[in-house]
Amino acid sequence: MWESDSRVILIMNNKSIAGIVGALLAFFGATFFFTNLGKPSNQPFVFNPVEAVNAIGFTLGFGLGFPTPLAFLTGLTVIALITVGGFYIGRNLYTRFAA
Image 1: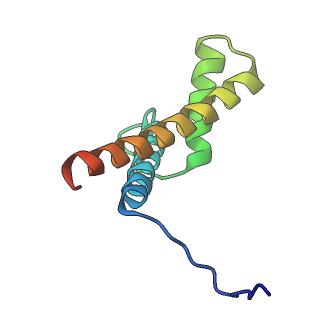
Image 2: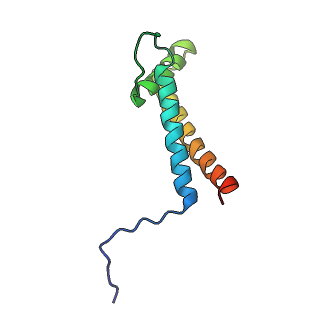
Image 3: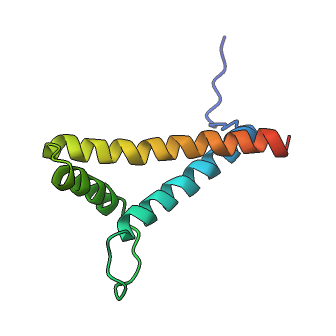
């Protein structure tokens, strides 16, 4: 008979943890950059992921003439690709220097 253990065990190796740290740093950096890119110098810095996607979408929609849904979808894709890239860069740096 199978015995069920009610505890959830999260098993992660150090490469995955380094990748998650890299992904978080990339996400926060990209969001902070795109949110505050067009702000005047007298406004405070903010961290708002929705505003970052809107800024990319506005740039693509108004500047390049993309349709609005495609511009916002592309903005979300850009943030997601930067986050995934940060995961793989963090993972690669860990395997190169720490392991």
